[in-house]
Amino acid sequence: MSVAIENFVKILYHRSQDPELDTKPGSIAKSLGISQAATTDMARKLAARKLIDYHRYRELKLTPEGEKEAMKVLRKHRLWETFLHQTLGISLHEIHREAELLEHQTSDFLASKIYHYLKKPQFDPHGDPIPDENGKFHPHQKQLQLSRARSGQTYEITRLQSSDKEFFDFCKSKQLSIGSRLDVKQQFMDNRIIEITVSNHTLLLSEDISRLIYVKPADHTAKSSAGS
Image 1 (cartoon, rainbow, N blue to C red):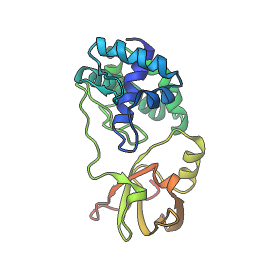
Image 2: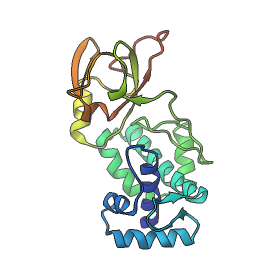
Image 3: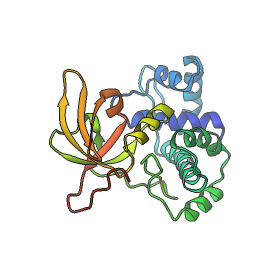
Image 4: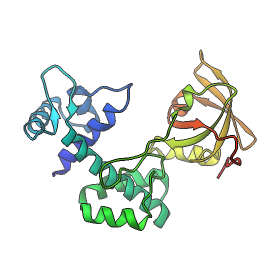
């Protein structure tokens, strides 16, 4: 499968999983940095190959076969991110860029070898689930964006959804990492600011930041792992 097709089904899958995004050809074109005409042409080709459902003036949708192909690309991408971070110590903002290149050059055989070498990881360093060899994965239960968390509750960070260096530098400096526990003190809804406490430090986060951090209700029987 070509790089262009792999990128197309991956972007389509990503956008279909986000309730705030759509999968209109124009939106897919913008995400891929190509013209809408090129997007429509690709959509027709993939529809002929039974990878997507394409109808004029409607959003694009992956078929079961198309979703299977998207899972293969995501699996390779996230396995490479995990390998690069755990084995080579490459930073969180750099592994995404490198994995974008490596995912297209990786056979299913090599992906399987990496998967078993890493002892079958379920999540990559950003907290995203890694599909297994059958395209199945185990998402975090009760996960939500920090921007939607409730005041007075304790949460555990499960995912950092970004590839931006400044974002990860900020998170590292404030001890916001996967597994860190935090207390939501107050939501300032009108100003779109959330007040949290992590590692005994109080932080005020804008919605632009808190929307990139995913959390789940903390297990109160576990020991605090803030800053781990």
